[in-house]
Image (cartoon, rainbow, N blue to C red; front, side, top):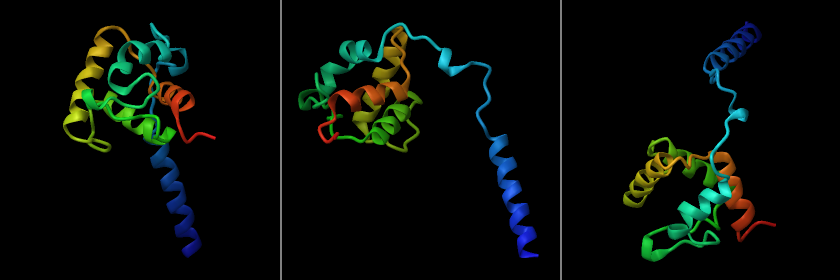
Length: 128
């Protein structure tokens, strides 16, 4: 009986997660952006986050060069999605959400995973 219930539970989980899968007609791998992540960072992020991700206290821009790639992904995705509050840090986070809207309005949209990877690969001070 326990084995049967375990199997049914496992199958239920499988169907549930399959049903929740993101289904879009857009192939995300084929989305092309106007600028590279490096160009977006240089044009829109350097002023507050620094040339090497070191941050800028005058602009209240936090350092990014000490974050893991997972932290970067979470923060960037949260901001781009309008701030779900998962990684919200208050006022500065709201400012960045506003800035993100401006970045997109200027046609400088970018892939959040690629931006996180760019910042981590190029600026992380703890990367081995």
